[in-house]
Length: 68
Image 1 (tube, one colour):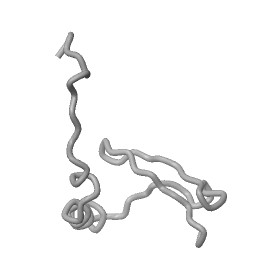
Image 2 (cartoon, helix red, strand yellow):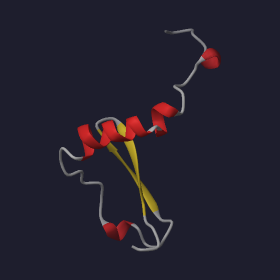
Image 3 (cartoon, helix red, strand yellow):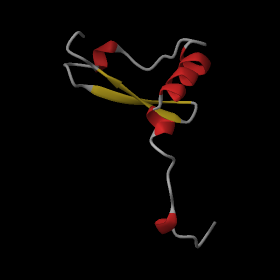
């Protein structure tokens, strides 16, 4: 792919990222299969704090809310 421009690059439709069927599939095949260690709660100092971690080549955002 050397020499190819990203100018004509396209992404998947938003439904592939936020659709109900995607959520259900990810929940069933990823999140309900095993515990995922993302980090320590102490990394979220206040509401709105966040950190990122990578799991199987995917970036995941962990966000602290007002409930702690």
